[in-house]
Image (tube, rainbow, N blue to C red; front, side, top):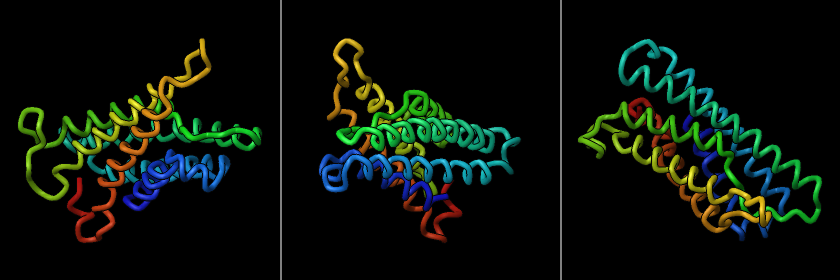
Length: 198
């Protein structure tokens, strides 16, 4: 699960960088996002499986289950939008995709799942409570969800002009959100630490 989320995050971290798109081309850049979305969906499915045992427990167990279900729905929306972007890149030789615009529905699902997980985490008011391994992850994950949401809004194409609200803001926020998700996934790659991470 951690490996799928880490690799997916890495795809979304490098994909919006204009130098990367310029180096590999529009089609390979679109493939990067699509592969990243599939890796997110794989991680989400494994997260659902891991959370299933405690789904009837009140509190954190039920919250982990619902967060996993909602987040996984968001990954499916990202699969659809990245597949459409890939199809566009393949069918339009002159297509230059420097921005991946997160799907609005996927971003909403991510944000809701981040809020559910954060609300179930140990906190002092609004701030995370320092504690066992992974205490910071719900807050950093929620921040990544916010960044993806901002990217979706900034990537909105204005009907009157046919241009995005701000490609630069969309790119920066996609990278920032992916960096947050990557930071949360990396500790799970260490076997001893993986069992302690919520």
